[in-house]
Image (tube, one colour):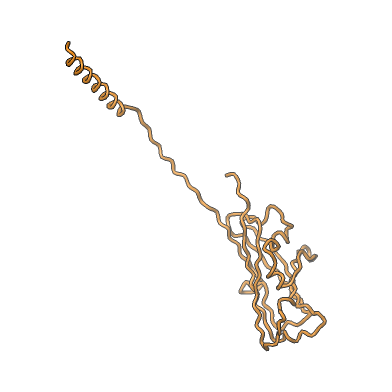
Length: 200
C-alpha cells in the first residue's frame, strides 16, 4: 500500500472514530425531575387598643395641677411572628391658647408612670415626663423591657399584654398659670422588632 493510500486510510479511520464518539453522546439513559420550593415570610403586626372609641390611650379635658389619670391599654400581637421588643417613640405638640408660655414646656409638667397591675398592686416600673420620654435614647424606650424585664420570649404571636400607665399633671407648688387653657396632643408610636433568626 502506498503512502498516499495509507494516509487516506488513516484519515478515514480517524473520521469514523470521531463520528462514532459524536454519535455516542446521544445514546444514554436520562431522567429529569423538577422540584418546586417556596419561601414565605411571616408578618410582624401589632396594634394598640385604648379605652375609648377611637382606641386612644388617653383623652382628657379640664385637667389641673395635681390631677392623676390611670389608663389601661392592650398591646396586641396579631402577626404570625413573635416580637422581641416594642420601641416606644413619643412626640407631642402644645397649643398655647393665651400665648403666655414664655418658654415653659407643658410636657415637662406631665409625668408618665408605667405600672404593673397585678391584683390592683401597681408598683412603678418606669417613670419619666413626656418631655424626657420624647428626648430619650431609643435604647431606653423598649416597652417590653420595662414591663417584662427584658424577658427573651417578648410578645408571642397572637397574644396580648395588658399595660397600665399613670399620667400626672404635676403640681410643682409654684405658679403654673401659663398653662391655663393650653392643650397637649400626644402621639405614641409602637415599633415592633422581630426575634433573632433560628433554624427552620
